[in-house]
Structures are given as C-alpha cells and as structure tokens.
Length: 315
Image 1: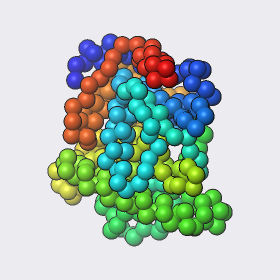
Image 2: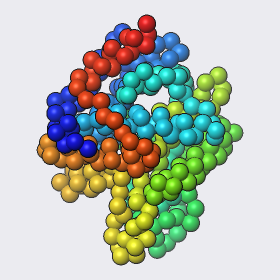
Image 3: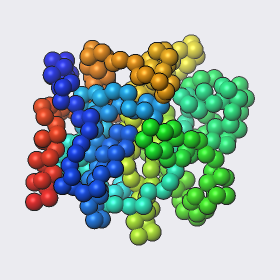
Image 4: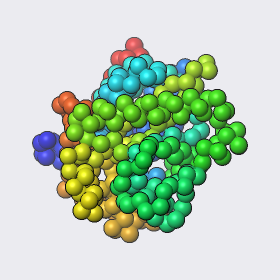
C-alpha cells in the first residue's frame, strides 16, 4: 500500500460523525449509528479501541472493517439471516433495526488474549474450568463459548457464564440454545474459509438480535476488531518454540500498549504518524489476506463523501 496516500489521509481520519439528518445518534466504541424508523445507519469510523477504550484513529480502518463485515455477512447468509439492507458508502451499512441481545457471544478455539490471562491467574473463563497444563496460544480440545456483558463506551465488558445468563433470565433458554448452535456454526464456517486463505480464525465475537421474534446476525462478523487471526503455516512451529503466532488482529497493539504500561486506564500512550501508517497498512494487508481479494482505499474528505452518499441514498 502507498505510504504517502496513508500519510496524507491522517488529517482526514473519521474520528466522529454528526449527521443529524439521519435521526437519533448512538455512539459506540467504533461505530456510530443513527435510527430512522425501522432502519439503522451504521457508520464505521476509524477509531481503534483496545481495552474498551478508543486509543487512536487509523486511516482507512473504518472502510476495511465495514467492507470485511459485508464480505463475511455474504459468506454466512446460508447459516442465518443478517440485518443488512444496503451499503451506500464504503464506511456505511444500512440495516434493519433490531432488538440486540444484551450479551456478546464469544467463541474461542485457542487459549489466548484475555482468556489466557484469566487462565494463567487461576480463574475460570466465563464460568468454564479449562484443563490444567494448557500453554499460551494452545488449541483447545474443542471450541468454547465465553459470553460477556455489553458495556457502554468507556466501560469494560465483563465475562459472564452461560448458567448465569439463564438463571438471571437475560436470555430465554430456548433462544440461547439457538444462539449457541448458530455461533458454533458461524465459527466453523469462519475457520474453514480462513484456512483456505492460509489463516487460523482463533476466536471471534458475535452479536445477535431479534426482529419480530426472528433471530438475526447483527453488528459485524469476523472482522479484525471482533476476531483474532493467525498465520496457519508458521503456527505449530512457533507454538512449539514458545513463540507468539504471526497475527493479523489487534493483539500486537494491545501488547504494545501493555508494554507502555497502559491497561485501559490513565493517559493513553502517543501513537506516532509512522505507527499510524504501519497500523493502516496492517489493516489493509490483512483485509486482502482474509477476504482473498484486493482492497481499494477511498481517500480524501471521508465525512463529506459519506454525507453525500447518504443524502443520495435517502433521495
């Protein structure tokens, strides 16, 4: 990717939106959404969130995530319906407004990240007692489901056990059983398609919603912000040598922040322009590796482009 193009895009990163003509605004960690009747406009910004805190804005990141989510929604449409109506801009999805279930559904095939940190500290992982003697980044005997509560921006998601979800009546048992079935099916699809591209889908987060009682897939799916990807070819050798896998996700940024003494609280370390260019290249290169197709960045004034495309879409 052209570093000069990325450098020139830094002043134009999409860090916030203000499109009052779309309706009421809700600001998430990465996406801004606007509700208009039974439609919701999801605008993927360039915000980078780690430890549930926005730590930087990365050129073209929003476009990468939005287009990657659209790619995976299309791949998964035979497993279950999703909320997409239209995609009028590289950073935008128009979706059916739905009642989002109040838990994030995380499926893990390997012990890594926050799950490893909990396991290493002797804690259960969302109520699951894992076998003794596991090593960091090791493949689990079978994928596990580790839900978490949904936090407001600036707050931390908290792990929750499936039994607690049911005992507290957060999700009805019959519905939860369907969620489990669909989550594991989606994860199996993701792992299969990733492996075709020479990648391992390590773990991922799903969000589900209801429209007139029908369960649908919402938010995003198998993106770099919601998933971990490792390079398959070198995984086993590096694991046996006690080395970290080659990663295509946010974990290197998390590790860099940890090395700076940042864990989600206090002053955020400064990202230099060179660091932002490197992160942008990482996102775009990763898109091409995951999706198996080229990525075309749309530079310039992102806000104006989005507004023009949305006004044209609305007629």
